[in-house]
Image 1 (cartoon, helix red, strand yellow):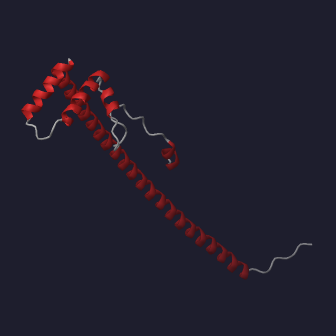
Image 2: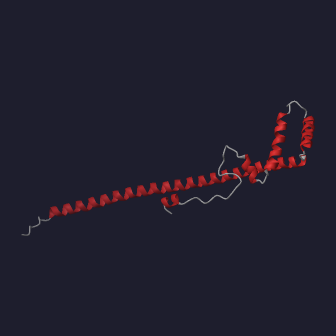
Image 3: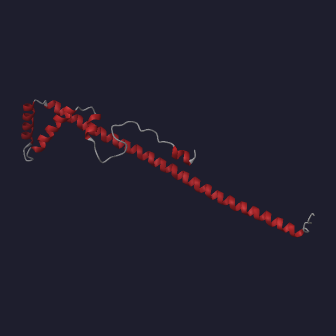
Length: 165
């Protein structure tokens, strides 16, 4: 297949994945959670609990933090088991996202490296073609000169041609 044909072919369509193509520094948490099937209401309840934990004094013993959070959940009518399940699903969604992003990155790197190898092979083939054309041109020029020299020597041996009137 010619270089231009390879270059003009579109790459195969990527298979759908939770992660975007390649590795991106920005993380769309809402998109990751949505892809994982987490509902907005569950996420909002989990975010409230997360915010509550961040607002607690850092020096509170873990057992006291737990009691405060459980009391707050009971007062707001939230099921601690459901909140825990949401956090587990969030962690799994993030883990799946990272795994898919890693797999995409590895696949893209392999494809890029294969393409580089193809390009190097094509570069070598083109360099060889250029070199061969140069050698062929030199051989042609030598052959032309040899025939021209032979014709010149023969012309010197022969009498001049008569002009026809």
